Amino acid sequence: MECCYSTKLSTSSSSTILNLQGFSSSPVGRRYSKNNLHQGLLSSSHSKHFLQLNGRVQPFYRQITPLSLKTYRGSIVAEAGRQGWDFGRFLKTLYFFNGPPSPAKFFEFLIEKLSSTTASEPLKPMGTSDVILVAGATGGVGRRVVDILRKKGLPVRVLVRNEEKARRMLGLDVDLIVGDITKESTLLPEYFKDVRKVINAASVIVGPKEGDTPDREKYSQGIKFFEPEIKGDSPEMVEYVGMKNLINAVKTSVGLRNGKLLFGFEDKLSRELPWGALDDVVMGGVSKSTFQIDPTGGETGGPTGLFKGVVSTANNGGFTSIRTRNFIVPEDLSAYDGLELQLKGDGRRYKIIVRISPDWDTVGYTASFDTIEGQWQSIRIPFSSLRPIFRARTVPDAPPFDPSKITSLQLMFSKFEYDGKLNPAFAEGEFQLPVSRIRAYIQDPITPRFVHVGSAGVTRPDRPGLDLSKQPPAVRLNKELDFILTFKLKGEDLIRESGIPFTIVRPCALTEEPAGADLIFDQGDNITGKISREEVARICVAALESPYACDKTFEVKSVIPFSKPFTVDPENPPPEKDYNIYFKTLKDDVTGKEVLEQSPMLV
Image 1 (cartoon, helix red, strand yellow):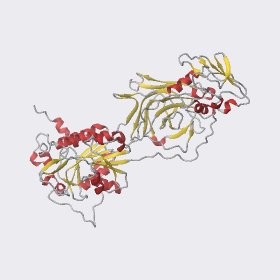
Image 2 (cartoon, helix red, strand yellow):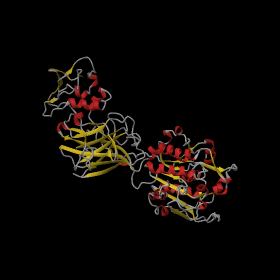
Image 3 (cartoon, helix red, strand yellow):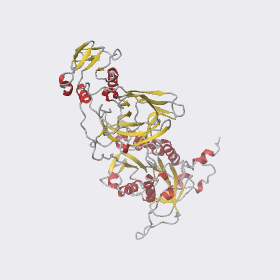
Image 4 (tube, helix red, strand yellow):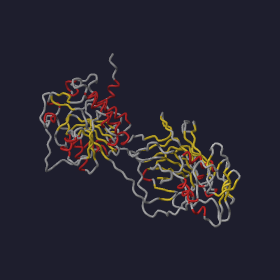
């Protein structure tokens, strides 16, 4: 709703007659009594208000009941030089949006004089919470990741199967959820609602056939030093099914690189919304707009939405808009940074209004945007730029905008800006605004939202011409270990195909040595060697904040050979690494699968 003036149905020197052809004074329906109407409407000493109901003039407060919107042909006639008001269109608007909550409240809205003042205090900042989820948090890499994140003061939540073990290992105060990635039913949506980033260190358990010590000393030495077997769930369940379940659980909350389509037409995707006109007819004006789909009006000749109409300042009006019905389920866009509109400009200034309440007449979080005449544009509206507006005035004490509770969208062309200011690009008359797409977007530069700890060697078991005797045990024993690397690769593919911004870290053999050795980053899945679990944890945390690591898959090892242990002098530790130096060398779309895809298929 747009208004910055008090609405009256009469002037001080004339009477107003409402000519309602096709309406009845039947007792069926709601009664608008003196008590229901604004006192200013009934007690004015300078004006008279009557209904001309089927030819009979009656006091305005008498009951009126619509017989049928289809047969209604009436209009409101004002005797002070005002233009006719289309009451039928007014009722149609109300019915499209399910009407106001009550007659009394509606007439209060229609008549009352606005008394709000211009905002003089700063707007409240938008609330945010960016929880980092760590899956596999009790493992060798996972628990180190948790420790690094907590030392940085970052909000962290752990996903574990064994609560007692996790609290004993990570502390009683750890933010913890109990679930099993191999069991989709345990990954409840409320667990992940405020999760914005994920580090997945969950992995199938490999242990010595002959058993291990309570502290898993043999396991800590690495698979190179014992005869391995799978313990617990199979590689298929953990690395593939578990990955699928985890991605599905967090996909909504962490967001997609290409955003989320809310309305419009994009490649092979399309999504329509129930738009309805919401013009100044609700305030007594005569402006009129509509929304339709133009099947060939898009930028490349495809379909587009079209917001068009005629705007007039007659009767103190001056705005047109289209608004969606309330979404059945509120849109959760908390993973994103704003809305992007793809549209063809006409040189005018428009508004977008986003609501987070299902109420009819409520605060709308609003931003204005300018268009370029005759040019297709992508216009981004950051959520942080939305300001709380009610009837064209800023509401300084409004609650912060919550992108997880979006209930409706609205596009508006109005002569009014905010707080008494006017739209500098406003002009009466016809207008049209083709809008081919509205989507939520992630602000550039995009950083990884899902960091996964995989394994070097995942593409090697099926690589032709490879000398397995020179490969690590997991490559040689892939079949005996229930195709562990095969399913790890399938799990990686699920990440790459998900649309989530990702980093896949493939460490070589993991050790309990300290971090600090010089490193080698490589791509193509060719290197062998060792690397500290602590170092891998640091790499994962660093990747979360680096656009250079986004959508990259790489292997990593230290320069120290297996035959030489690596130690650190506590009195003189090595300097902390700038992992961006390594990330910047990485390329997109290099996974090691290229060799497999280029090799001729054996028949």
